[in-house]
Length: 133
Image 1 (cartoon, one colour):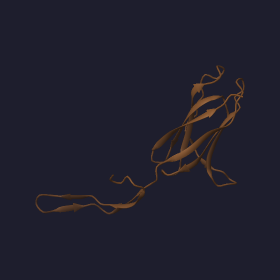
Image 2 (cartoon, one colour):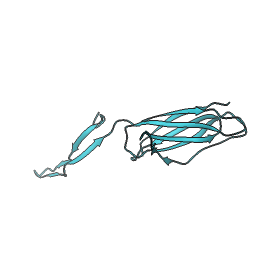
Image 3 (spheres, one colour):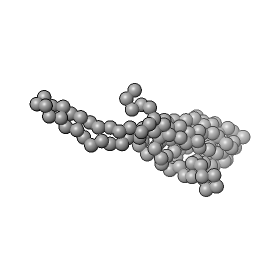
Image 4 (cartoon, one colour):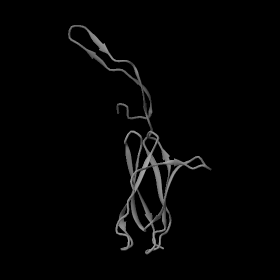
């Protein structure tokens, strides 16, 4: 459980040598953040022939800011849209609520894998569904 609990730590490496000499590194501050979490929900249905659905990703906690998000269609609901994916994009703050969020609009129906990463490259995968209207 070494450095597994979220907290602030100070770390120093010591190396003892057989002649009685000891080498110590500088004392370093280390912050172990809370585990990365987020929420992803399909907020708007999509027509089978018009990609007009939405996925809303919010509730970001833990990890190291800034966060990046990408989505990828995992299970197709409409044969007109056999694939859909985005690159990683940085999560922004909503101007009115100051909450971190990412909204994907005009996407086809289906089940999506939502990947969230933090500044250290730690990540989680979520699932969101855009239902067919």
